Image (cartoon, rainbow, N blue to C red; front, side, top):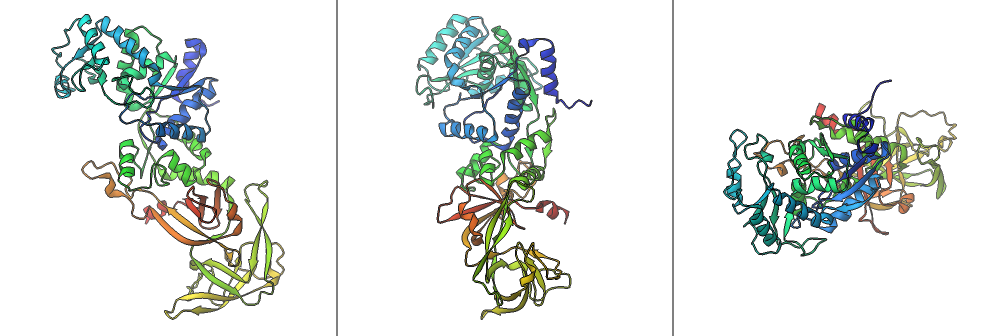
Length: 552
């Protein structure tokens, strides 16, 4: 039987076979609460929680809240909401700040063993002393301080006796190491900033490389899964754990998710938000998990996408159209089919005798359990303006003068004449219908080559429609460092249609529920909607329109 395990699963299987950690698997997802999660994080979420599920382990949600300047509880809440929406449940909700006392003691232990020292150098001086990848660093003049002196200074830093930037605590590793990260990295700095959980208790805060490994150790994480940019950090990760002889987690790196037509930098996404180029972190054009949710992406589609692209050791760029494929595939299975006319033109059926009738329509042909609904039909309808052409070419099979089409779930009609306004624009079509052509009961014998959708004018609900497209026109908007990535923002990434006509069943639409507007795409109700004002977001088109544009 072919082996389909990814390389991380192979490592875990090997560790279990060797009896490491008694076969236990404990992973963690450790986001910094300084922004909303993006789709790149979804891959890490699916991986960490998926590994725990497969190997009957557990996953902690740990917030890496070591920088009080950029962190906020609003981000904490959004991260928890995103993970739960994706369908995962964490074992423990933890924070790096839970360990501030323990981390401080670890730093004291490093000082006492001569493995850390307080440095008074400026950040510029420290950077200069570190050298370059080809030039070894030089020792700080403060590296020779005694453990007793370092301990006193560190305690004074904690007590707030020194201003920001005046002193840092550095690990005493190797200034000549070919790995720049091992050249006595800073592990504590002074910051007089209010922390979202610890308040003003601390004025010194640990840096990521120091806090991360020890947090993993404290939680007895067996497999610390990181993205590839942390590969060079692994020797330092191991150095911290080995130097204090504490529980040692195993760091494993994988390639992060890179999507074309997007940026995956929190800093750049924050720029878009702060400069008002999008409506917020959950703008449906944003590559955030909350943006995808608001746009109408089903959680299952993101999980299926993450599973399909798999786990690799080398960076690559994934087509955004592949994610959209999984969105379409999932929505095709679950979305209710409804009729909505986005650019309406009125149709009068001149020979229709009844004021109205109710016709049966299937909710989803892909789901036999989805059932049917009743839709109203009357003598006055709306159809799409693009479904009629007065002077049509020979192979135009939709509605034109003297030509017949079928109305979905209803009857065959024929256009007899048009009504124009003073400007010569067509404002109304006059048609006749064929009573024997009712869908499901057709005895007319009439054959047509096209079926179009419609909405009864007497029952139609007005709604707003937001047509979303890709936020950037360039495949790699961040690729040219000499050009601001915002230059490539797509001016047509949002088109708002103020008065579309929708069938009355959509009055009961629920936020986030997927609908297929027949022939127009997949849509969902936006959270901005009210009982009297419905707003629908286009989740994705029925077909990959960008692939067609690229081929032209």
